[in-house]
Image (tube, rainbow, N blue to C red; front, side, top):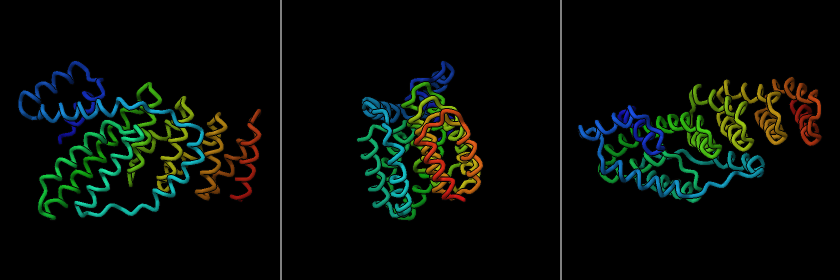
Length: 268
């Protein structure tokens, strides 16, 4: 699918199209470039998903995210065999739907993958289609993530951060957006989710350095504790300087102070 149509459909489903975008989409449908029936199907599917109430994450997010990260690392990379891949995808969809955390882009592409694979009969053709659709999925995830991060709703911004969980590699634009979220988002839960997402990409120097430098920029004890845990998990000795600076802050939470001292001892 052309990138401009991806954006048009995403905006249509999110109900935030401009008048110009509405006119462009209508013209594309009239010209046969967009299939109206498929757009209607996606609209109905998305409406059912968005009817699910999203619960705000609790403080257990910090204590649980290392367990989730460890589980993610243990997962085997998806193979190219179509039946198994499709099974994995539908399982993932079912899990996400239950949690009420599907983002619009994932819905569009997951549905497209499932429909497209129904028409693939030969293994070679299926493999090629898998590669193309997987690439398109990653592009759409990135686009929707960047869009949702700008929304006023903390739930939408949390969805955006969660979209990065399946990205094997995140480019600098995604990493910098996550760092901006970590350092500036007013929601503690969104910032904790950003730490989790960045930790998954700790092999990226920008993400790694950003996590370290964020230590002295936080005012939430929960976020400070999570960062202290993360830098120890990364075994990043460069964090010692930042941790010592954090100890100098007035009115630092006593639990944070104890944790920071412990982290410094581990890293030295």
